[in-house]
Image (cartoon, helix red, strand yellow):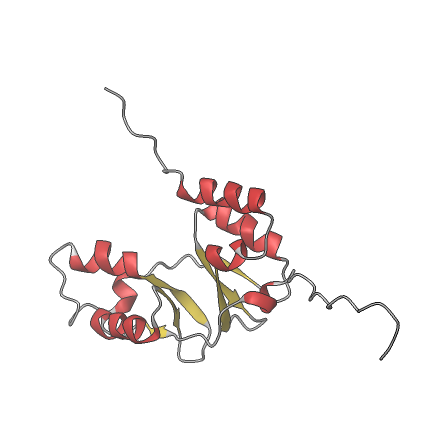
Length: 160
């Protein structure tokens, strides 16, 4: 028996980079896929966010479950014949794997997004980062500020 005091357990350092908490592997849709096939991919992967990639693997846009509902299902379009390229969001908000989590949070706040894609130097998706991922590691006040900003309406409701 040793007479020394017990050692405190080692505590792992808090993640500070996107690469440390991003979800991977990334599933991608293609612009010419039908919305129905992309929706099935989302269902099977249990995600609501897919990068849309060119044949070379680089990102062309983003498709969300909300894009499918608001742009394909709520109008006269048919998911079995509408292609992803017709309804995807072309503006891609992204970070790099080595970017700080604070930079990812700032981009989410700036663009009112809860998910962003993580791209390598070739613009190939290597991960997805969600606000819920960040919330597990960031200071609660900072996460709260990000959530408040992300969920603010673009236009305030009209008052009677």
